[in-house]
Length: 170
Image (cartoon, rainbow, N blue to C red; front, side, top):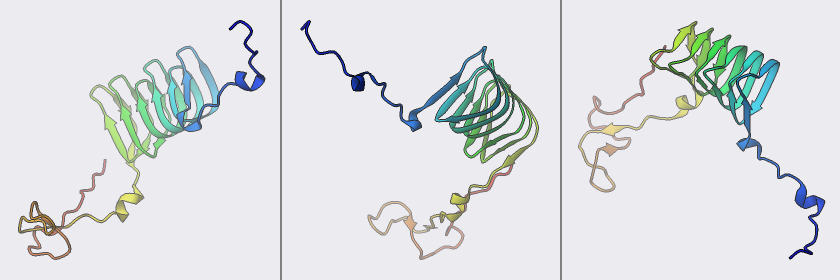
């Protein structure tokens, strides 16, 4: 028990953190100037000037003051941003957010109380164009199990034949 062998150098090495599970945190009181590149989830509560590139979820905390061009997969904004924000996923402006600048995203959520002064443009999602909308046929029976609406290529009633996903432009 007391004479156990000493740990080797291999056992003392820290285990590497997988890149997909990486977390970047800049707390309130931190100041950064330049280009900040983050992979994985990122939480910023300090002051940033320059450019932010985030591969993953970017959370801008309520105390944060950001004067930068931001590129992210997804963003949740609770603090103050001045600059352009581009996201390939959704952007959520929380009630405490103050954004001065343009937002380019496929999904923009603006909560009551959020302040946004700029333009928003909707990014087109190319994958959605390739997906074919299902066709709904009249008759009320599914060909396979006899329940539900008919879904298939043979259209009995053209008025109820196919539906299209509506496009929404902001």
